[in-house]
Amino acid sequence: MTKFSDLNLDRKVLSAVEDAGYTEPTPIQAGAIPPALEGRDVLGIAQTGTGKTASFTLPMISMLKRGRARARMPRSLVLAPTRELAAQVAENFDVYAKNTKLTKALLIGGVSFKEQDQLIDRGVDVLIATPGRLLDHFERGKLLLTGVQIMVVDEADRMLDMGFIPDIERIFGLTPFTRQTLFFSATMAPEIERITNTFLSNPAKVEVARAATTSDTITQSVVMFKGSRKDRESSEKRQLLRTMIENEGDKCRNGIIFCNRKVDVDIVAKSMKKYGLDASPIHGDLDQSKRMETLAAFRDGTLRFLVASDVAARGLDIPNVSHVFNYDVPSHAEDYVHRIGRTGRAGKLGTAMMICVPRDEKNLGDIERLVKMEIPRGEGSRDTTAPTQDAAPEAPKEDKPKRTRTRSRKKDAPKEEIVADAVDAAPVEEPKEDAPKQKQAEPVEKQAAEAPEKPKQERGNRVGRGKRDNNRDHGNKVMGMGDDAPTFIAKSFAERRES
Image 1 (cartoon, rainbow, N blue to C red):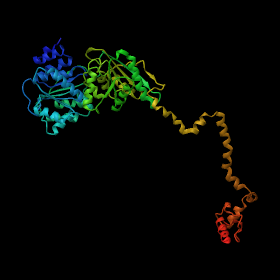
Image 2 (cartoon, rainbow, N blue to C red; image 1 turned 180 degrees about the vertical axis):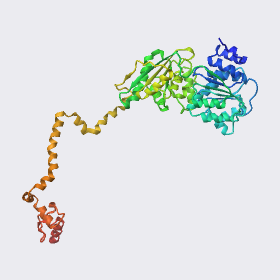
Image 3 (cartoon, helix red, strand yellow; image 1 turned 30 degrees about the vertical axis):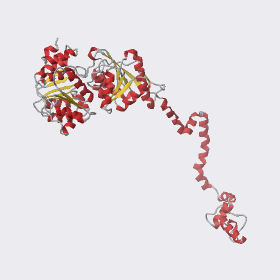
Image 4 (cartoon, rainbow, N blue to C red; image 1 turned 135 degrees about the vertical axis):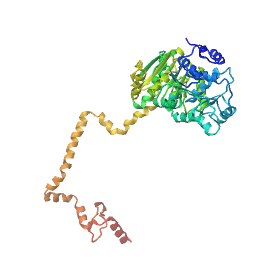
């Protein structure tokens, strides 16, 4: 069995490793460290939680033990996709390099440029950065990459998902072609393979486990869920999450809840707090200080639940996570493996539970095909039909039928009345349809017989068009105009006579 002492690491590094409590390297460490110490490029393919960070920090510290960095010209460069992963690499470097005089700088967003510039100006041996912030410093003229001897790209497939590949290619072009490159990824997408073929020279390929495999120490399950109504689905889904946590009882010491969208992260965290569950959100829109504070609280046990977006799904080494809850089915099947990899680490037992709504069943099928197993259906799989406490504020929406008041009365009326209304309406419509024919067939005598009903209107029509019966004045008659004189003429004539 291989031990760290068999890997030709510097004795000061070995001492730090022993102090950290490690005696045997993981497969990826045993495969990647020897060729890295020989100066070869390394292409490492391994899933999250396999110890990739030590695979490049240990040989890097051993090779950089001699020499001194110059101002603004780091001797090595480590690129990480997220701030949290970059900060974790920096922590690992501090642990393993404690017996050396090597210096480091961490360049991530959310931190003052001035403080980072001061570190770079002093000269650093190891520069750990996210691609965006690194290029910001370079474009401001505060950083030169021509002195980089070792370049590390960690979680390259996550870089691809986040759209950092153009930045990575540009950074490769800013470093010397004589550099040594250590490249690590969980999967080998065509774009990742193209980059490795372009920028790596005859790399030693170390493949330990594909991302399509999940740890045997993780108990997995999925709850098939359908809301009672579309407008209540979200609140009922949050209640189901709380029920799943309650059903786990004391087994659920802590947990990470993953959501696909940042807005859902905030909503779920707020809902859990409302119902007495200690939870805090973490996603890319939060300030870096708040994100680090939340992670620190979760690590030391003062925070029980961490509600996160995929920013926390990759690379974070948070020990003793008992449960992972996928509030949403991941859009990409590979993300499922990375999410549940936060639990069941270092041989410990873990539990991963997921909620699947009907529209996510296709993504669930993709996950099951990737991991080559059917995820067991949980006991809570059901169709929700009863309203929940969370749904109470949405109750006023039930008043919608008031807009169709007449229609609702028709629905409530007995069938006999509806039929009767239809029958009663039929005779009324028939004369209207036959009306033109009857008028044509009526004799002239019948039309004349009806004339006396409106004698004054017809006489008025003969005298002048537009006169109406209500315009007659029976008091002051005007000579020469008959009984159909308009009221305004009769009044004016009467007023002149009285004056």
